[in-house]
Image (tube, rainbow, N blue to C red; front, side):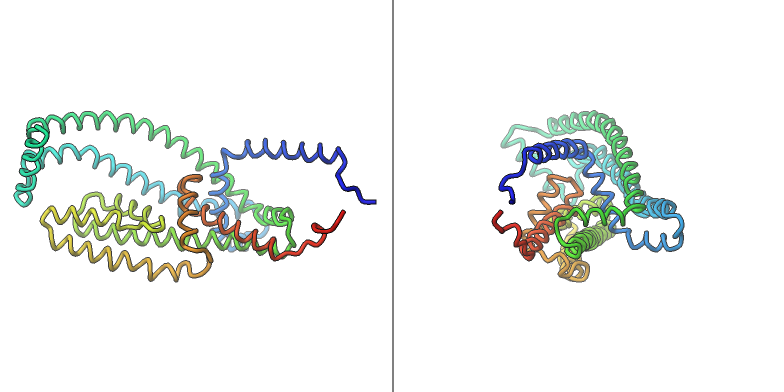
Length: 357
């Protein structure tokens, strides 16, 4: 005779299991981003690791070490170098900003001297703020900015130490992902409450989504940022590398894009009386940078994500809110995982779940 209700010991066991799993989640939650970053790198570099492993079949640990070192020198180290260069450029630009504004007020360029004079007259007429007060305020701004930069530098040093620690943990985790990745996937597939074929298919789908997100979003964003950097450098605009990276960041956000950066640059060139440069940047941004998204996205992404653009939009924004920059990848991946799981459960027939006890 089948019991309708489970014995009390099973209720106690399930409660104990739920409590232990909750405590484990609290333990691992601070390291979730580290684990996810390591997982993303492991998926992206799996083909490379397999080729290295084929050359050292008797030493999986050595192959894992070589692949981890490759990830560091090929990806992480260049990103660190670019980040330091951008930070230095931003620091220099902020230090020069008050002096440049003061120079514009005291000795404006003849091309826009009339615009500066009209602005100063408007400030004095409407708000009673004369040129002398503007100059004094800019000098106060320069002093305050210097103080803020000193404090910011100390915060950056503290953040850099935390970043280096997190980076070491990512590399440490990545080594074990490469060395024991196949066993991890096998265990994970066994724990998914689906048939083995469906479990493997679901995990393969997750890996495909990570590849599609990286090569379709990040690579395209870097291409657009490089095109923007080239335009800023040719036109002599300040901090081309910095604004190119900012364009790359905006290019990853659906329904925004690089125009958030290059349209203000066009306006800046126009007010500088550089009409040819303004027109050239407008044409380059709208035709080359803008059209590159339409031309390259089908090639880099195609139909691999199989998600509506509106769903991708909210998943990216929500992912950024939860995971930070990692959310650009993890937001769409988690959303697609949920869709795949719902599809798998809907397509699977479990008559025993509906049977009478």
